[in-house]
Length: 211
Image 1 (cartoon, rainbow, N blue to C red):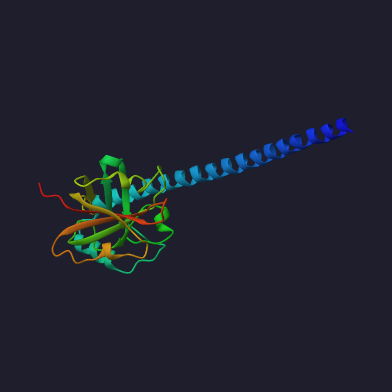
Image 2: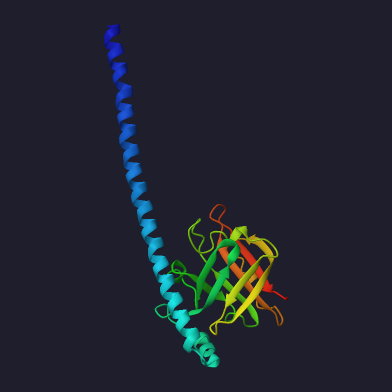
């Protein structure tokens, strides 16, 4: 009788280990598929960003009528026809992306987007939103910026203005006070992204750097 009991109890762990092995293999396959999909999406994003850069370069070369450009930017745009209004460059975190003229769920998957405010390098508070894609793209390293760090913004004429970070904080998603346009005659940029850990919004504000 004791031998029978021992044989039965020996079989239970083997089945248990087999189940764990099968479950682990399924999980590994699903994780690999998800990772491959993410890599593909990131690859497509890089390709689109390169195309946007090309469009920006053509605009700066041939877009000599600034008034016409501003009128186009202020006109109502459709999601199907966004355009690049400038470039955001932050050497400290190796960031260099086009800024799209408008913001939407789909456009935020492509590049940085103007969420509120004027055209780049104009008086006002230009608010730029970007996804936090962990450590791959867009504003994933925005949290590394510190007060005094420098940010470059290139407008449609190719003119660069440097901004200096003067504030950095987090807010709840519904708090849009950082987009206020009450900045007198100053040039301000506000960078917005998600904190993927606590669900809050990271806000980095910078003003025109006075040399």
